[in-house]
Image (cartoon, rainbow, N blue to C red):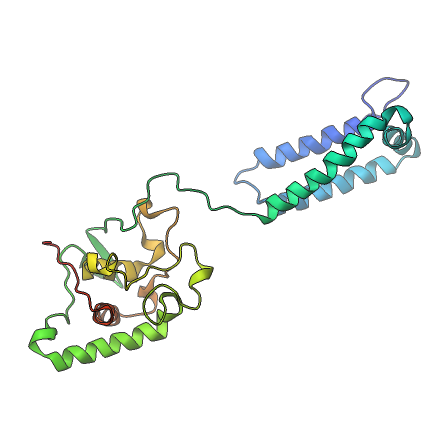
Length: 257
């Protein structure tokens, strides 16, 4: 960085500003993948410190750097620029602080489907399940063996209150302990517009694969639900589905409807 000598070259303060701006533009737009803003701020802090160390390492250079700043702050003819700077700078700092603390949920970049179409089949722990034709293996017991059916419902209830209640709530209304910390909040399963409109195999897919298994049309809002296939076996998922319909006094939709 050449010093200003005999009236030639850029003032030192202008050189510092150009190097600082150049470093920011280089780090911000030339590095891939993009540097996170927090890391970028840390890098720019070190760039600023390095520039100040360089400027202050020479008395003449440091004096040249300070001269325009001292004139701006003390010279009578710079009263208006001082007033503007004293007004704009605090407002800029306040705005940056507000912008950093205030976050907005961006609207989806494409049309979002609340209940996206499921895949034709899924892999569940090495087993292929046809989502379009799969049936709950315990559903037929409701008429054939009511007592056995109630046992499976009870097991599903146990699964629900050990795993699902924290988000979906005691009454399946999406108001569990953790619900309002999620975006979007969990579905209200007691609403007639949710599981009553869906097939049991659809619920199996959504529970097993969770938010990570949603297709692109389900994004960018996605779902906070984990992929329960990592924690539950196949029977447990079918049983908790039985409980969901039993508790809400609703009936699953068939593919023929």
